[in-house]
Image 1 (tube, rainbow, N blue to C red):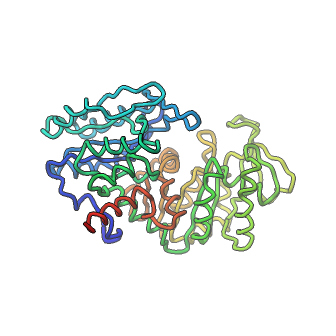
Image 2 (spheres, rainbow, N blue to C red; image 1 turned 90 degrees about the vertical axis):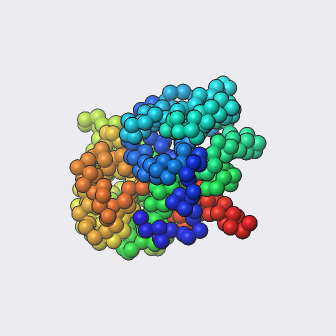
Image 3 (cartoon, rainbow, N blue to C red; image 1 turned 30 degrees about the horizontal axis):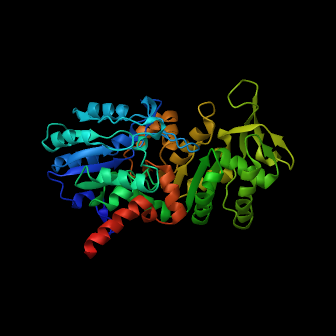
Length: 437
């Protein structure tokens, strides 16, 4: 990895003295759904950092969030097997042929786990003595202080810092500044892990792309993508939309109504439509799949051409893009002529409608000159599920890169810099403060 492409102010794990140190490592191992690992890719990408820490004589205490156990409306935290780290630990133990200790803390009802209590001290003593390979903390979002504000958050950050000598962030996908990704980095010597470094290096290909630059973005909600979408529009040469984002754009542009698209989202999309009337960067996919129901029931879905849309027309649910859309001369030419392609998109309503995503990925692969960068999460999972042979063949291809966090990439695009992400920025601020002393 060419670390010369990184901001020299970023402290790197390979610069840390790790021998005989307890190292608190924040991963983004958020890969558990309903108590099972759906895809271990995010875990596999962090094994290099974990191996390096141990090889240098460090003693790892690992942590990650899993899911969203906190109810946003009530604040109640659900502690249970669906969001446990146990499947992650079992996977790592099988991969690395060692045992990790998972401490148990008693939750206080809907408040979650109030604190890291002193029962962990014996495990840390055994860790320092080399009697156990590592400690994996429970889901960070089970703790009351992780997403809190004020005293509870401050206390949790201090409890985390009290466990270790050094902090390493290798959680690119966790861009939100919570206690375990942000606050604790202010309290310990803090460094970037190898995965975080690789993600930042490859983000430069998106933020300073070789042109023509084509981005493909889809999503289930329009309102959550307004900021990144507007920033991306200014960055790209061509923009292709899919999912509810595309449906919303079509409603705003053509004056149609599509089931599941709200009036608020249509109003929010109108500035993008007006901007595109002037600049013409959006490449419309010409054929849609419309359905009467949210599912694939024979005889209840049909193909609709965008050219046939008229003001006042009402459509059912638009659940996919027809594969023929990618054979359209304009669409095919834009993708074939790109030198950088960024994809953060599942084009259809999965698992029922997948032909749009499959056609998109195969069309992109035909471009042998472009740097192809894929967001993580659902985008990567869809690629692997639909085209497993292609995925395996390009996994080590220098022209492909698969991020572990598509949301983090969009946030960096919105900010215009990878180093504006708060968990990254705090590493640099901490290092700068130490140098100033």
